Length: 480
RNA sequence: GCGCUUCUAGCUCAACGGCAGAGCAACGGACUCUUAAUCCGCAGGUUCUGGGUUCGAAUCCCAGGGGGCGCACCA
Image (tube, rainbow, N blue to C red; front, side, top):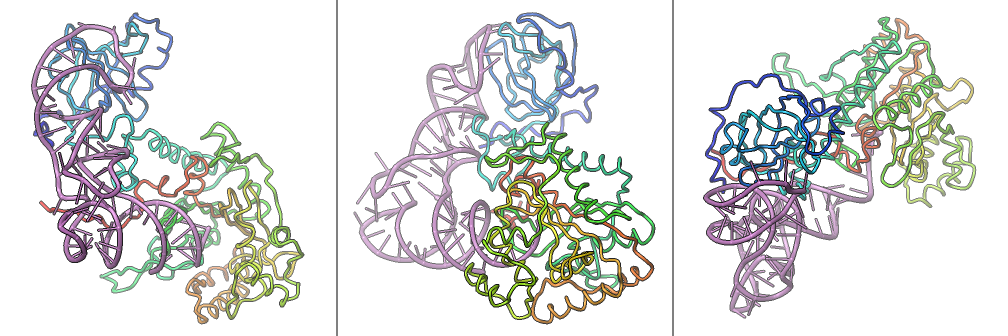
């Protein structure tokens, strides 16, 4: 099966000098006339992806992370020519030669010297079809990345998105911080946690479901603009839009309210889109999404009223609301107040229809335990969610900074928990103590980075944008 | 967790109740300007696993496993 490849890596070099990325090496040589030589010598390295043997002349395509280039290997001028003809697709080599244009006008490196850097013992799939089997692509991402250019581009763009976000936030005076992943109280969001155990302390710990409360402690501590980009873990279902671990951006800005955060959000996302895709208008699954600010702003109650076709509000008749819930197949649970019921109706009828970027504003206080009461609308908080392509992209609020009110909110969550809501938020005494020391007016924001990357890479499944997505354990037939 | 669906050579796929095949890769050989696919040759299989039905199962049925989609849950 793998007959040829009794070759190991024992005899290949430990390093290879003077490598230039292929994209850099070939820069400026696009217009070399067919059949001419550039006089420029380059050293490149990468994987042999295609081979066309013509006897005393071999053409190969060499690829590295920056691009690919044709290698022109002639028996008359290349060292170790016979060995070159024995290379396999997928072998790593390094090579030095002059940039030339072939008779057909293909820019090539006319190899003088080359070295095998690592042989491959397994093939990289069909050279035309690549590897399409999704299981192989997710489990063996190293194969996917080499075999499928679009996969490679997706992850390169993901990196560009992260770099762009960091650059913009640093430019605006935000400081990047790291807070605990291992937490004694899993709080700051509505979700079930993963539990683990620390042996020396003989203590259960939780993988964080959000960094939120730690970041606000830092604002109490005087860091007025902080952000964290990091993994959070939620012990919930897996779907095309959910991976148990995912990457969240959270930021907090002192002296700002949710209106400031709205402007920050639309500007940040629009500029990132512009930088990584070249445009603020992005095609996603056949639909054009326009991220150019300003985005539409509407209240949750306005949007759900629009969809349902009649006025929906916290002040409406509760019996009428129950009728509407029934009509949409929703059964309210004991303990649900008007706010929760309206939120459920909104989620069922409205969320998936919000295609263009939209700020959904002013959520019911009942479902927003960390957001500050709206300055003029009783029963609502100053909170928004940004929706794009029918999905939540961001969640933000004017942060609740009153320790007494925060305690009441936690206690209300505690009652929901007692009623069986496993995702109701857990009270954090130290956080309340921190608020006692004074949290200035603060705007906070959370953005699901994976979903942002999905939109900016036209990916329909979160696994397309997570390098090593969570899968069931693979069972190997033999253990050697 | 539930429903639907899928799994055949290293990869991409045929065969759909009657001898398990092709292209590419690999392996051997020919070829000095090719562009996934030149030519000749040679190999390659627990058809995901285990049961069952049948004269006969990759194919039909049952159970299990992996993947995908949908629902539920969430971001």
